[in-house]
Amino acid sequence: MECDHLSLSASDRTLINRAVANSPRVFLAPMDKGLSGSDVWQARWQLPDESLSKLHVFKIGPIGKLEQEERAILDIASVIDRFPLAHLYRGDAPDRGLLRQEFAGDPNGSTFSLRNYIRQPSYNATPDSIFAVVDRLYERRMGEWHYGTREYRSQRRTISEAVPWWRAKIDLPRVASDIGYEELNAELLLHHGLSVTDLQQGVNALLVAPREMPIGPVHGDLHATNVNLDGNLEVYLIDFGNTTYTWRAIDFIILEAAVKFVAAPAHAPLTSLLECERLIDDGALPSEYRPGAFYGTELSRILAAAVRIRHHCVASRAELNVQNYRAGLICVCAAFTSIEWWVNRRFLFHSMAYHLGKM
Image (tube, rainbow, N blue to C red; front, top):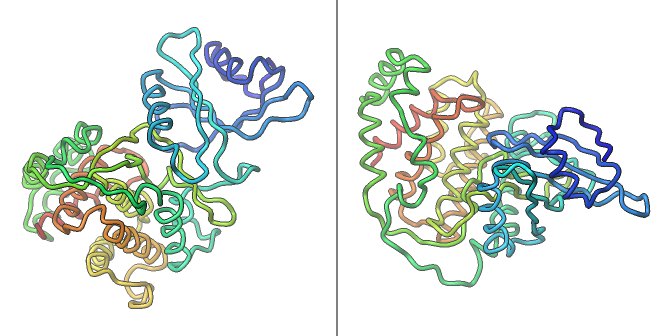
């Protein structure tokens, strides 16, 4: 097999060879997967008639995680509009596999993440265009899940039970020490009257408090780099490793957190970030404030996305209890603090304190 990437290990080459049915030539391009621990490639390969295959995605990583994702795709995610199924390949290494899936997006492969659409000025995103993207995500791409005709039951669960994969990541004192404990603690006390210890205790209490939760199918990891767009702003989803049946609000809470803390500009002043939180709580629309007055166009786009995400959470009846949503947001934010890159961790701490003060 002739491959245009020489850095691949022998075991990964074996996996790719099986996935392309021993094609003589394979063309790979690395994909930006952000927080994923797997190696993800866009791939085409030479067919017997010497034409090229359709564009596919190859995810190479731990076999256990890929088996879980394949089951989630077949059992749950396959009902998503125009969703391509996946096939798992095993190689010589017992702990490594390859998940092959036809690329869901522009056939030329020119997609970009929602995170980049919000952050990069070259895309010319506006609050109105972001509203439209969020509408397409929930009403069209995930409509069968969140706007379908099925009746969703409610169960009494804790947030810890609803999102166990996030619970294990929470350690606020350690993260606070990484970013400067004394200074952060003083800021929290000044602005919110809460310390780092208060936050950790508050999060712990929220995690174990039983709540009535609407249960249904969820993506489970709907952060801003797992939502992709093409040139026509059509929406595509990737990475179904956490797809399952659980608290439906998770597909809204995680995306709001990711939009705010992964896409928020690092240079934005704290006062502007907290003002953004207040405006989101009020459901402020882009036409109701002057973006340049406090925080510029980047935060205006984040505000538009977060307001529309909350709208769909209520409209789809994923969660009608504001305090339940707020509790979930606090706990997911606490888990996000464990991410060392791309997130504004200081903003995360202040956001948790802001919302905890509203409980």
